[in-house]
Length: 232
Image 1 (cartoon, rainbow, N blue to C red):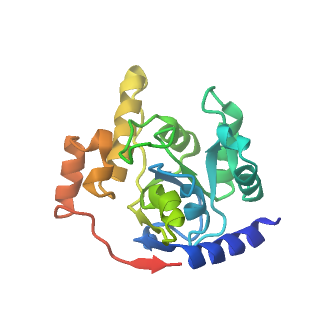
Image 2 (cartoon, rainbow, N blue to C red):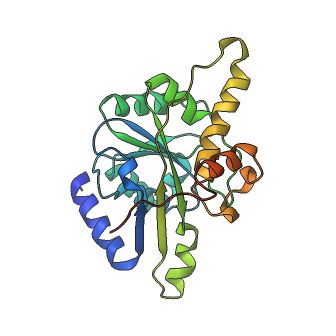
Image 3 (tube, rainbow, N blue to C red):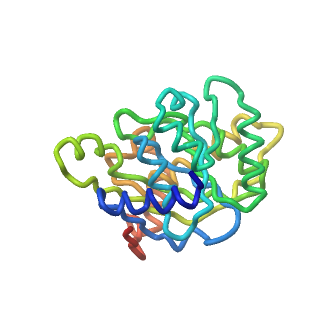
């Protein structure tokens, strides 16, 4: 199946069986490369990003463990996603992601490295930061909620209410080569804290007590400002 056909099909299906909202979508440019750093709650996170209303060139990194599931594997391949082996230093996936960004695509990545089983943010890994440095592309934080309830909602014949809240894009500062590990950790924490402030408190997990989270919230008057809501 062609990518655009799949995009239209998935969007129509999600409009029918879910309540999906995109908040502050104006922060995502309609064209040009962008790294979308998301929290990872469910397998539904990928289709949620895939059908973002303002772009049809969205791609994402997906763990190779999903290849075990024929339907998910078919979807990722048809959507032209990028397979990532999280158990190794997957330089092939890194190069493919860099090439996608050079072509001007938007790329989704979960810095946590795996799905959260509790719903709360896990400690971030430096992959998104390294990719941003390598490609010279800004990072746009995205807070996702509701996808963790999809299985239960469908089981009880309810429409899942899924939301993606977009934050302002920002650039990773120059990494201190003499203190590289600490600089990468600080940059990764910045990415994760910017995701955390887009989420209700119960989703902030590892980062709920980080001073930077409080600082970012204080800058916004104590809560994230919702400027716009767009539904599928």
